[in-house]
Length: 182
Image (cartoon, rainbow, N blue to C red; front, side):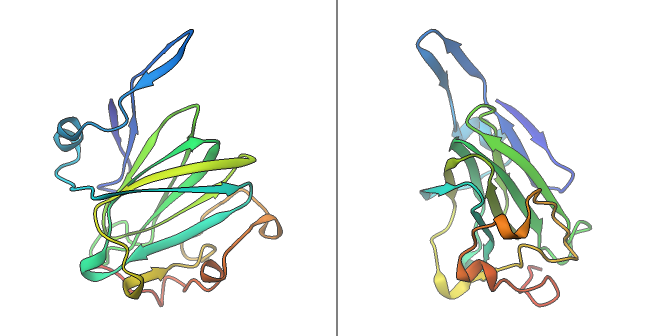
């Protein structure tokens, strides 16, 4: 596996070694000792999966306090634009974001540490998205950053009228009003 640290400290793209032949392919998607050697100890406790159609934007979600979560995400089918926004008040990159395309073709994974909002936009006709998390889902600690916050200025590459957003995602708060991390 190749670990590529991004311009925001703690955020990584992971490119697995993929072995292709006439039967298909094989790859290791997660290997604890190699992961810890590059990123550190993260105790993933749950795997989640979602299926979405083109134009679905999920995010920008995060959990606060003792229920904050680190995530390791990837697209099993299709492609997505995946985004992480730094919400760590003491970080020199506070309010900045990293966007990366994850697809079944490139098999890239994206590691997002605690202290970040996370979201993705489905670029293909359909996508199956998988993510490992290191903490339980706690609805009382959940928050959403506005997907189109002008301060964060994410270029999703799609017209607003083409987006499919949940009521929760439409109600995200601007960066100036969200709960941030120390």
